[in-house]
Length: 78
Image (cartoon, rainbow, N blue to C red; front, side, top):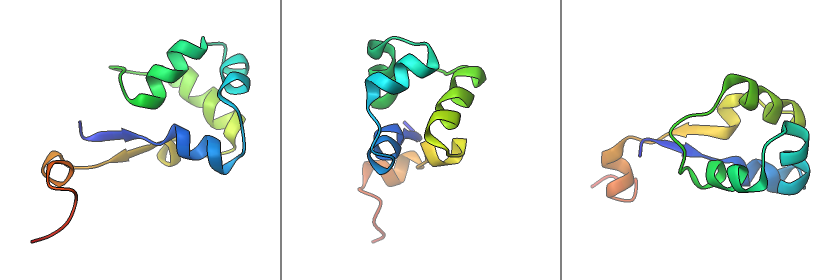
């Protein structure tokens, strides 16, 4: 997948717990876990906005683009 979710990194940087974030956003911990692992097909802008509000960050802090060919070879150049 070309989009990498960095939510776990931001939670660690902010020393926040997933449970607190899920309650603030209004989603279940299970759905938050799916989002953290990148196993979702999409996320509502409203949900993304609430996550950013809670963590004090920008959407770009949570999502990163990694081209498929870089992800497959470990991201290094030959």
